Amino acid sequence: MKKNDYYSIACEDLKYLQCTLGTPLYNNIAVGAQQVTEKMIKSLAEHTCVGIEKLMNGHNLRALYMEIHKVLPEFFLDKGALSMLKDFYYDAKYPGDNFVVVDRESCTECLETMYETIRAVNEEREKLELPVEEFEERYLEE
Image (tube, rainbow, N blue to C red; front, side, top):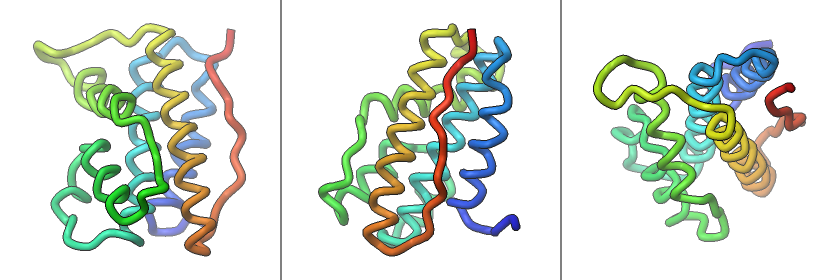
């Protein structure tokens, strides 16, 4: 049953993304990884942070992470990887001066950041006694 919350939607987005891993559509996969990561982080932020409504309406993964980290100092993610992944939300999705063509290596990095985030978020959700879904880490197919 589909639920109306960040975590459930992130889990559904992950399942959909994993269905595309056999394609060379690296831009779309990178954008999908960013979306799963963003919703996972927001699923934790909505239970731990207050006064961040503006951040919750944006796509700044690093800033969202920093707000959670203030409340949960043991929650650790790579800020640089989050910043790189955030850039793909616009740069790989929309035309313009900053448009990028995502290569296989960068796409794999996006997936690694996404899975690192899912593991960390699930760990914190378990501590908070929030529901957690099992997931399988899958990467680009040969």
